[in-house]
Length: 175
Image 1 (cartoon, rainbow, N blue to C red):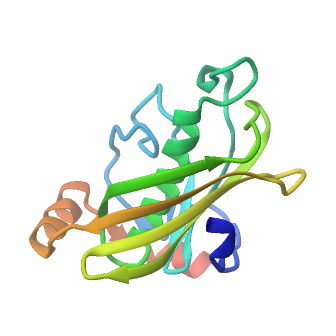
Image 2 (image 1 turned 90 degrees about the vertical axis):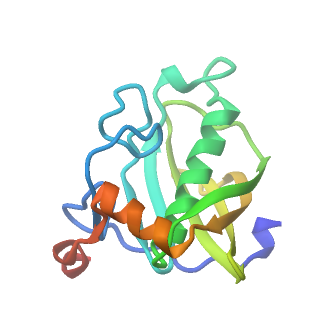
Image 3 (image 1 turned 180 degrees about the vertical axis):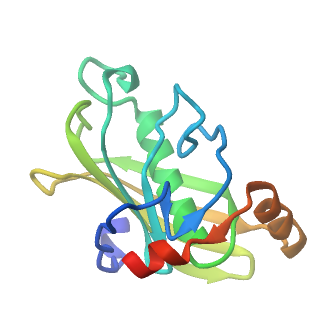
């Protein structure tokens, strides 16, 4: 179904991007985006109000079958770009549902691009979509749809304070 959802144009790659372009936050241990997790993905995310994207080549340690990325890792990447597409719109949400479809094997060691975007909102439910593509061929390797439940305002403020999340005006000017 994600191929049926209109995808906004991808943002350009800003020079000197922060861990999440346009934002600054305290170092943390998130498996997907945390720079303190030496065993994690340490994704270099780029988020704004139109969505989120990252590019990477998965190391061998993330393989399932020989030379193929583990499906759980692919789901983690999709979950993260969809979650940050929500953050890019000014709120945070927790994953309520994630539905992934694998179109082709995702090879380890090969450059991929993951993108996520918001497709709709209904009360506190924020609907998202995402995909992973092969950077060289442009082939769609995996797609996902997700639902994120927006955190209540008091929790949002507590999370922003805990992680000291703030807009990076310098990064926004460079973009």
